[in-house]
Image (cartoon, rainbow, N blue to C red; front, side):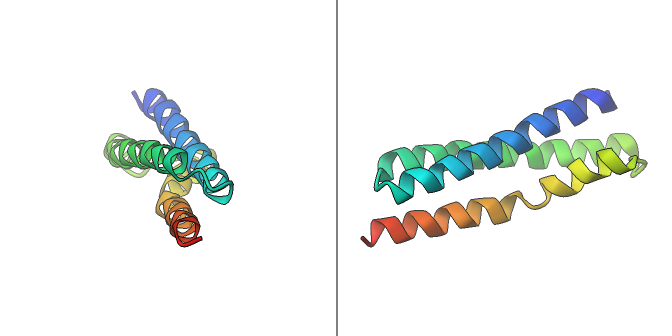
Length: 95
C-alpha cells in the first residue's frame, strides 16, 4: 500500500510541475487559452497529490525513509509552482 501511494504521489507531483511549467511557456508565447488549460490540469494534479500526501502520512504513520520523505516534502511545494504559473498568466493577459 505504501509503495503504491508513493508511486502515485510521484506521478502527481511530476504532472503538476510539468503542466505548470508548460503553462508558463504558453503564457510567455501569448497562448492564453492553452496556458489556462495546462494550469487547470496542473491544479487537478496538485489536488490529487494533496490527497495522496494525506493518505501516505496516515498509512506510514510518519515513518518515511529519506527518499520517501523527500518526495513527501516536494509535494508540499506544489502551491508555489501553481502561483508562478498564475502570475505569468496574469502578466500575459495584461500584454
